[in-house]
Length: 373
Image (cartoon, rainbow, N blue to C red):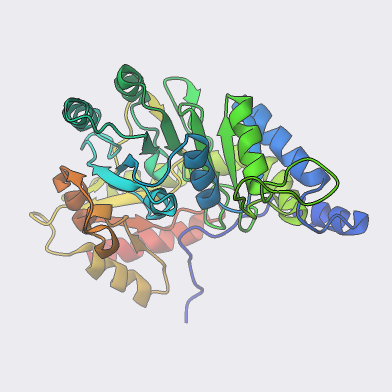
């Protein structure tokens, strides 16, 4: 059996183990501690924002909605083409999601559909409480338009940048466009803390509120006194030590993933019927995952056919995200459009893209794709 090639495994930089040992030696092994503070400071300096380090990207999105005042009965717009965590958190708040289709040129939320829906709901007196905009597969949404559209109605944006650390658009970092944003440091992301995430905002009061809610909403004082429902969402000091080590190699991971993407496009993009996720000219993506498309009118193979063929070579590949409006759990909720997301899903497959992917392993992936097609 050939050695397994994973889709996007963790990639350690070399200093993480020493920093974890330092945390153990200090006995700061419980949640919170000096490395949590350091990780927040380093990430905050990188993004020029305030940061609250958390247990997951999902917890960051949940707290983000809570800090924006989302509650029972509210409506929240959300990108249709995304991972389910983006809209699961809406249901955590007992609010109702409304899914917005993607634009074909970037695969991100379609600003025209967003504007159309906001106009309709404004006239009907049922504007949403917030809009969750996802920076899908490392490409920042068109916030130059989306921000203006939402500002027109006074609707705040929660930016889901779980997949987009290091990416930029219009010269700004992903995760700095929304009133509040969330990042993920799951094992498959561009950097990892094993499990972990962060809530980010330019508004320090939002981050302070999130930090309060994330530590069980304990009021100041000598005893445990609570006026608000809280959550156990803070990142541990041990995992933050890993994050501090990963911050040292963030730029290297960024450059490596982009190089992997460029090689895939150079060696597979000239095959008739093969394409890749578009990158708008004003965007610089971290290429978290390389997403390849298969035109069924040219190549009589499906993404699932190719996935199984790669699996037979012990190579992990995955379908693109299945749109939320096609998920049975979200069937009762409204979707604006949906055809663009469905077509992308039907045609797309994610290829191994981790920054630790060797040139030889990428050659193996490329040759397996060519052989099958």
